Image (cartoon, rainbow, N blue to C red):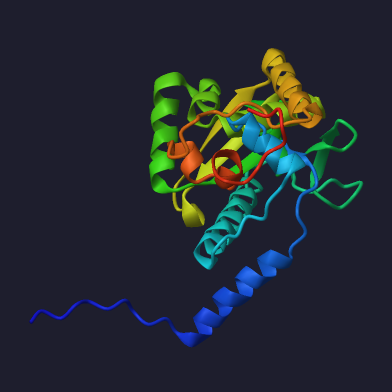
Length: 252
């Protein structure tokens, strides 16, 4: 009889670390505002729930490790940028000692920039918002393919609408007209970049979307009525939106 492969037994110390990570995350304070990092999500209903009826996101240890890896990769990309001769690069607001913050709608709509940078070789006199993103190899390859096809300034909007909306918010609220994005695979072994221009019309449309979400008394329209649609299947609000949980009368 062929032996059935058994899953490897996890080291008890590492298992204890996983438990501690999940417990620490559960104790972390939750965001009390609509985030500019999320406003580009195509489902306004999900964004409405995230602000008006937030539910905890129960991340497992593997996901938390990926998040940590991403943060460290983004920090590494920032360290590398400081090696450019003549660069001016800041990740903290010198007035507050914290991340650069942009706010609207009485603090209900908020974002925190990774940094600001001046001295880029393509435009040395222009201040840019800087964001660093760590992505998997498949998403990274897609970035490079789009950049090769469209040129750098048209890359971000097609590659990731959520990151694009975030970029437009940060430019619009900070007054800067350019955005510089570095994209790396985990650990920063491979990385690339693109610059994006400020588009006032897109910025105003994003602000209008945020206003609708914040001011709506009831959940906004669903992106899909199919709970098994790929965006709904993994949504934190799937049961509330499609399942047995009740939503206020008058919602879709």
